[in-house]
Image: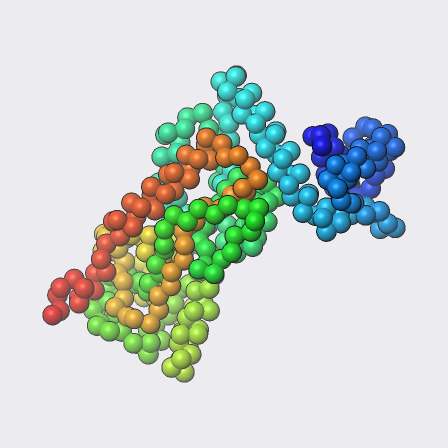
Length: 317
C-alpha cells in the first residue's frame, strides 16, 4: 500500500469517475485503474463499484475511505509540522467548541493556550450541533478535536477517541432580583408563571416540557437561541428563568448577578469531553489543548460557588 494509491483512491471517489480523476491527477486512465486494482489487492477487498451512475465506494470502501483520509491528512500534517519547525514558522490546531462553553470557559483555555504555545496558531469554530454531526466533522478532518458535552448514553465510535474531563450540572437560574430568588422549595407551578429563555442546544426544551407535563403544566418558553450569551443578556434585563450548566455562569453566580433557584425538579448532567480521531497521532498543540481543558474543568469544579438561595446561604434555618 502506497500513499499515491490512497490519494488516487480518494480522488476517484471525489470525482465519481476514473476518467475525470485521471485528468485531475494528470495520469492515464489505465495507470489509475491499475493503481486502484493494486490497492484493492493489498487491502484484500473490493473498494469501488463501477456502474452507469459512476464510481462509488463499496461498504468496505466507505470504511476504508475514512482511514485513507486520516492517513493522508496526518502525513500532510507531519510534513507541515516539520517544515514549520525547520523554518521557525507556526503550526496549527483546529478546534470545535460547543457554544455553551463560549462565554468564559473556553476563552480562558484559549488565552492560556496562546500564552503557552507561541509557535501554534489555533482556529476556533463554535457549534451547536449534536454529537453525531460533531463526529462527522472530526472524521472529515474539518477539526482536530472538539470540546463538547456528551450524554451519559454516548457510545464513542471505534475510530474516535473520547476523553471525559468532568461533569457539567445544569440548574435553573435567574437574575438576583427575580421574584423566585427569595422563595424556598419553588414548585413547578411557581416556575410556570414566569417566562423562560432556553438554548436549543441538547435537550433543555424537551426536559422542560416533559417535567412540567408531569403536573399537567407547560413552561412559558418565550425565547429560543443557540447562543448562551443571549440567554444571559436576556436574563439580566428581564425576569427570565433559564436552565444552564453551572460551569458556564460560575462567575456570574459568584458576583451575585445570577442566582440558582431553590427547586428540585429540573436538573441535568452531561460529560464535558474532548473528542478526536484515534486514527491520528496527536500533535504537541493538541496535547496541550487537551491538558488545558482538563485543568480548566477541574478548576471550575473546585470553584463553583454554592447556590445563593436563602436556605443554602444559611439565612433561613
